[in-house]
Amino acid sequence: MMLNKIITFIVLLWFVYGIFNFDSAQPYSKTNIISYLGLAVFIVYLIYSLKKASRDQKRNPD
Image 1 (cartoon, one colour):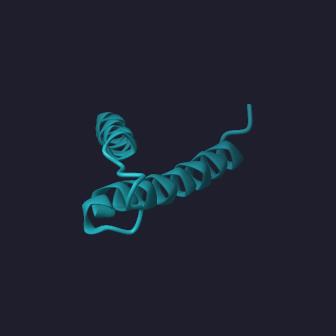
Image 2: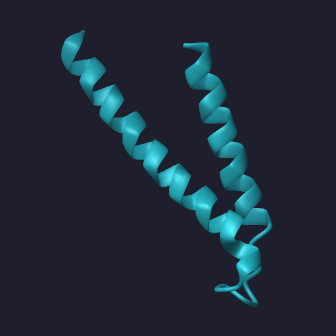
């Protein structure tokens, strides 16, 4: 449980870091690789979290 919170915090921190360091003057430059990776990891983790929440809700319908 604590590991999920730590991973969520790191993913969100990386996502926000990527937003603030994105160079909009040169969107396809090599300096934006970290920003794009952060966005990709955020999207993958969001999909994973939604699927996990759906699976957990099916197991324990309250």
